[in-house]
Length: 143
Image (cartoon, rainbow, N blue to C red; front, side):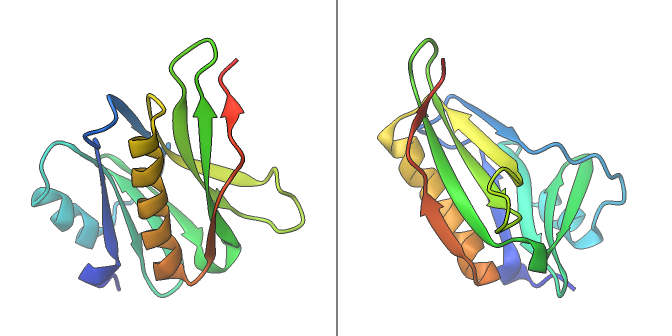
């Protein structure tokens, strides 16, 4: 069962001009999150929630469930402008043995300190909810 304090909204953030939520292809939507979406404005793109066993990423028309014990940490990856405007992505790090095994679950941009700070705050909220670490990765470039 999802408790209200275990629901985090991901909306179009004011410092970002674009945001993208993870692909959520399962159509077996969570009823609690459907109800939560009904009270949100159209700017809310995704809800991140937790029940007894799963982290749940739900958009308005799809859901993705990940076992909580498969998430080792969260990371925020700033992509600095080189050829384009840059962005910031948030990742769920899934395997301690393979750092390439991650799920990018939210991305927004263009890159700025304000967007980076907003993403770090959201990642920290989720990490605290799950009881895992969060880290700010070294920046890359969008070339």
